[in-house]
Image 1 (cartoon, rainbow, N blue to C red):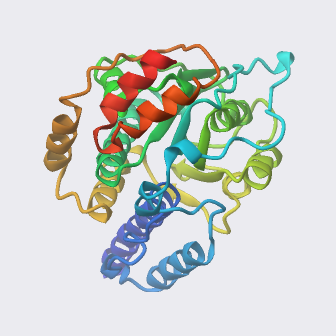
Image 2: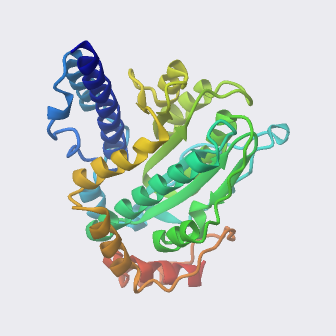
Length: 349
């Protein structure tokens, strides 16, 4: 009997972690509370139900600085997206962090940078699970953005000892073409130490680079940083000076909880217990966004991408916005068919 209770308690704990992680991602990226208001029957074992309700309550009390929902963003003019205020951050040469130049002519409703830990402790197989989750998350976001008329700039960073910019948000890459990079296995696994501070420094430049209403960084890591210095102070600057919302998603029980809290600014840790739980986490996000299954998501995403004939670009030039002619053309461009907009912007930029 005691063994059965222990198993049930363990399952409840894992379910609670996944739900809390999904809640944090849902609120930060999509700005909606569907996941927060969902059922909590899965938590019906003892103190875990109370603990999970406390985590949800904390999320509901915490307002992000740019907590727009996709529905709200869809009613805002992308042409009026605010430019970055203040100086642009640049890393020191000795830090060996990629330099990302600003591109304020690029305007989007949401600028999202996903930071992926590929350190040696992750391992090749678990990194593939991490990539699979990121792919699903981007597909969900693409479908929701398409329906809401929201333009999203996406940046991807991978890191171990060294930091690599995989996708530059200034390059006008559609999510369709970014997903093609996943399909073609273009994102390499690079083992090494865990330089979370350096990865955040690359991400901050990318989030400052384009003009946007909302800036979100999603950090996925399996442990604590062990090179490059503590990331907490720098993450605090990102949140307080730039209004960047940071979700720090820990994977496995070996994560440094104090570090994750310091990065995100939350009072609790957002984590899942093993990399295999990425599948369940993705399922919760599908349900929260009213997508019935992975098959339904793939079908909707493929239909959306049929008209996208743009080209993926790893590097792009930074130039000033064209004069009034661009604004006149942009009014003709419906963000409900944003692949055409991307094609137009590539032509002018």
